[in-house]
Image 1 (cartoon, rainbow, N blue to C red):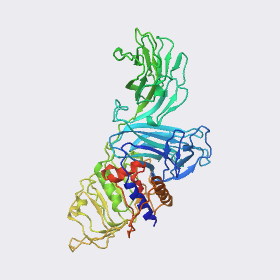
Image 2 (spheres, helix red, strand yellow):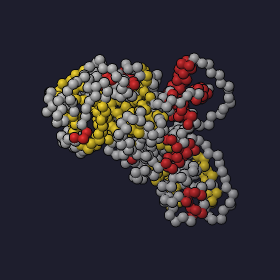
Image 3 (cartoon, rainbow, N blue to C red):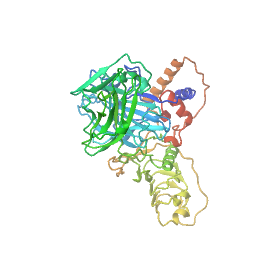
Image 4 (spheres, rainbow, N blue to C red):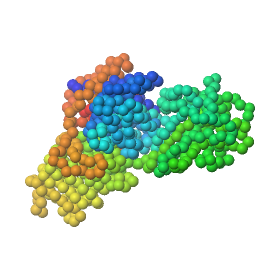
Length: 584
């Protein structure tokens, strides 16, 4: 009955139309979600992640958003992720917020790593009494993106309080190198006296600037002209200096080890002027007379630059010779470029094969990158350190797996396959002997039958272990008859004792098998979501009864290689993800 209810939910969602733009707000740790002061509707997170425990903060800043009063903490796993469907090739805006709020009553805010799509984002350093927020924007390389946290310190458990994901128009930050992510350092509305935030502006948060000596701010709220970005409220305010001889300093104090920054600046005359205003954007006061800026009235001039900076670098605006008025600026965004180029992820053939492997053994899908970041690779495999990693070792030993050996023929980078001490049946596949890099094949202590393929027995490069398979002929005088067995669908192994810091599997005594039962919390959330959808639509749904025998999980393959198109379309409408299929 429980599975039938969730099937009804999926059938209802399948009838929804596709929404091209992604606009997702996730209230982590909440069941029903909430609505914030800006009218944004936040959903609970039970259908967006498989792991973690919901918690409520014990202390909250009076000015903090109620959305941040709950969180999801992850006490198991080397990395834990949220997954979202997007449009491959589009630019997305992602914000992650963390409010410790002494939820565990230990007054010990944790430190941990934040990742996206197999890329390192930042190290999160949470606070006892402050909300920590990180934002980035980048061009995605798949139709599924992930936001993950990973434990880096013993007994310091990662958590997330809130997540938001937005599609962005193609012309936003179009001059930035799409090979890199833009990591927000500051977003300033000069001259404003309060935070400016609009749902039509991708929910970007423009904060007022702290003005120094010699800085003048002015505002003209009567301005009213069409502008797509940023909001008009940002352009109704500006700051300037007292004299044309004064520089207007925008940023300094960059890291001593150097970095590349992307700066996006907005200029508009808040009042109609009769005198000439012309100025330059300078790096360490090095002027470029060919790029003078003349702010328009009732319009906006948008300027961008990518600059290599160091500890001594200063970015500023300087009046040109002959300018009658000093420089001004309305708003600015400053981003660091990610240290490394965005990864394309683990080799596509390996990704597809791993998805098939998970499906073949009846495990729930895992949408995180198996090899990246390297310190958070899946615990039951090893990878090369190439720019596009290959999976080089699989450790499936002592994991309670049954059925036929899965097809790993596409994983040509494999050097080690260790599947001993399971209950695999049937014959040894011939393709194993043709894997070009395979050096070790351990199939001991299974239920294999037939003979050893000549591709393996004659391959001097492979160290083979098939002891403990009583039905396997190793004498060379074997009956050609083979036995095939229909594979069952056990859970997939997690490797106990895996060390995230090394990416290596440590010795273990007892394997840990993921259960194949439906978590009660996920089931309850799915039923609640289904009933809410029915009430929202005010339609009655009639579904013919079926005598459907469920046999394990309905799975969705990993990444865009195998993802079901219909699921991608239906989940965008309600900001759900194909991870919903893990409920089966």
